[in-house]
Length: 351
Ligand code: NAD
Image 1 (cartoon, protein in one colour):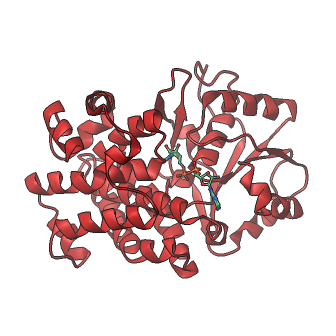
Image 2 (image 1 turned 180 degrees about the vertical axis):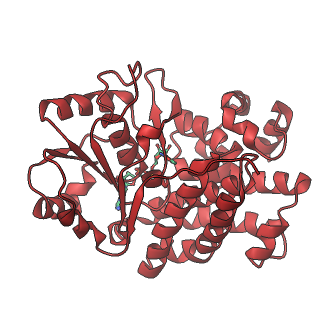
């Protein structure tokens, strides 16, 4: 027993909790960081009804490129922004985290210290970014990598599941599988401890019981998924993730596979590899399964249910050695509870 547990973000969770922004006496000027879809779904109009002095920065792109962050910082400085509200998926929240440090060049920061208040409002149920100190960015060399700093913990997260009801099937499935990957990787990471493990186990069960219904559009299941992805975020914020995330980075960088799906494409095999050397009995029993193969099949089913293939070759992935070499450079791979060398990784990718 030798660990710290630190999660300083206040979490407000429940349907229509967006309205809580009214009572927060937020310092003006307020900047909303979002993608254009937030207008189409009426979310920006709702925020403008609740808040005064709102400035909207709607240039967020998936897998946030650093030039968007530099544009956002310019926008924040020009408009004397004191409070930043991220409304969107992990890409919007991560973009807002970096903007809130007001560094003019995020690739060469002087110090990554937060200069504004930061409120995160997720519209997907996946990344848990609303409760982590992580931001993942695409740098100018086209490599995607995480930055980790205490400045990235949001002050407040408002988890309002009604904002996720508009997610299409594919986004629901891919982001839900991201949350499941966070939970299982936090559970088995060499850096885990009993707090994360307990949260992760409960989270896995919530996702196992609700993801399929959530993909089908069931609102009650989507409510559960909002809570579960936040819980998975808390779990992995303390432990970090492992091989499935390491492998996901090149799959997203090179083949543009959405983040959660990119994690799941190796996860269903990785759990078999881990189970062979390090039996995952507690998970199998807690999810009331007979074998790890049932969990593996469930992941494949969820991938297909979301409208995707579970075979790498269907995404044009033809250079497995390149994927293996890039994945092995991510230091989180060393937190995997089995030793992953190049030979094992190549076998896993071939499988
Ligand atoms: P995203 O933010 O990239 O959004 C994916 C798609 O869903 C976009 O096209 C977006 O327009 C759409 N969308 C989002 N919410 C919607 C809604 N309510 N209705 C309709 N469409 C909606 O996806 P994401 O999976 O939430 O975030 C992925 C990013 O987060 C990746 O860059 C990943 O690396 C990163 N990430 C960060 C952390 C962290 O702790 N910071 C953890 C995991 C992943």
